[in-house]
Image 1 (cartoon, helix red, strand yellow):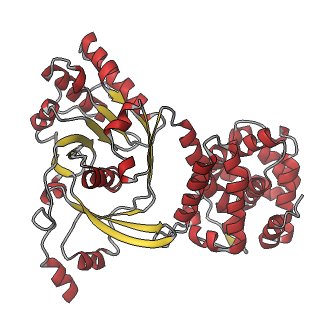
Image 2 (cartoon, one colour; image 1 turned 90 degrees about the vertical axis):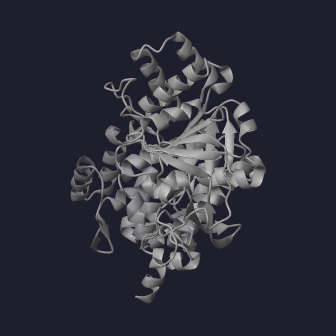
Image 3 (cartoon, one colour; image 1 turned 45 degrees about the vertical axis):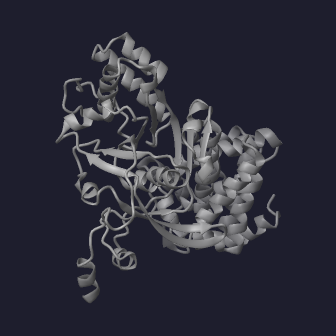
Amino acid sequence: MSSINNISKMNLLNRSIPSTKPYTERVLQFGSGNFLRGFANWMINEMNHKANFDSGVVVVKPTKQGSIEPLNNQEGLYTLCLYGLKNGRAISEHEIIDCIQRGINPYQDYNAYLLLAENPDLRFVISNTTEAGIAYNANDKLDDAPQESFPGKLTALLYKRFQAFNGAPDKGLIIIPCELIDRNGDNLKKIVLQYACDWNLGLDFVDWIETNSIFCNTLVDRIVPGYPKDNIENITTELGYKDNLVVEGEQFHLWVIEGPESIKEEIPAETCGLNIIFTDNMEPYRTQKVRVLNGAHTALVPVAYLYGIDKVRESIEDHVVGKFLKEAIFEEICPTLDLPKAELIQFANDVLDRFLNPYLEHELMSISLNSISKFKTRVLPTILEYIKRNGELPNRLLFSLSALIAFYKGERNNEIILLKDTQSVLDFFKLQWDKGHIPTIVKATLGNVEFWGMDLTKVDGLQKAVTTGLEHIINDGIHKSLESLIRNSIK
């Protein structure tokens, strides 16, 4: 009880506690959630402190839900705690992020929001309004205060800026959305131009958007669990002040920004050693993330779980399962990608470090949700590309497919597995496993076009390999089967 009383007497984090200075308001940010504060704001903070970026952030609340007041109560400050492996060592560190200058609620003060458009220093727009945030709302109007949708709000601000500076070419903005949808910048720009048409904003405004505002497509990657409610008392005692906005995140970060070369000249990421990649084509990086990070997760789950392991970190630490996954990544996944070999190896090693993060316990069953559709998008393309490039089968990934079919039997060591998938998938596997004939089960599964978008029984040798793997798993057990695979004895 005394520790709680001591914490209650501590001062709330504000700008009198750390030594901070104001920054020029150059960044408009839609959203104050954990991810942006643990990802983009941290990077801006790094560039402010290490490269004189001098970029203050104004946060705008994009929806009616939630409140901006907690952020303003702490004068934009919060503590970021980063955990994970760094240069092979487990690191736990924290710092106060001071780049956010203030927050605005457009639902309470729309004029304050529109005044941001008249700031001559404004240069960047960052957003994370959830996957549903980049969406067209036909009911939005220019004279709404505010518009309901994020793209509607952005269009109104861009038009105000266009008017305020008489369409000056140098007052266009660099817009960097972080929503987890494919081609997020392209989709956002499309909706903005739709509003420009709907609201009759004129061809000059449309031309200004097309010519002087840059909408980037992005790929973002960092695990940000958010507020550490289970450990906040210990963290508060360590910090020596109260912070209602503490954010936890992993050490790893990756931000791929697709746009013109000029953007790189304006964002001093390289000077600070930040893992921000500027490119004119982000697709190879998206493919790398999906196949190496997500694909490794998906390939690991059925193998490790049937092996008797429950968590990702324990899987990598296990001599047999860890070796299986490393070989799958370096020998079967990476060779199907077209990025420079050194980049691929570095990314793959980073992925393994993330899996080994001692501060984050990732349950295999939490990754197993909808494993069939995940296997289709994350692993199957690698299998097909490997066959195309090498003229042979990727034995480890096909063993994972065999294990996946065994996983959907719904049993581990005579205990029921709580499978989580669509009812049609669960019904399919129940029907197949009720039959109990392995070659029939494999043929029906691989031939299910609804699962894979194609008939996998037509891929030479694939059905035989998966059948053999499943027979080993069911008849010999997963331990003996996997150990046999590692010794390259399964044919």
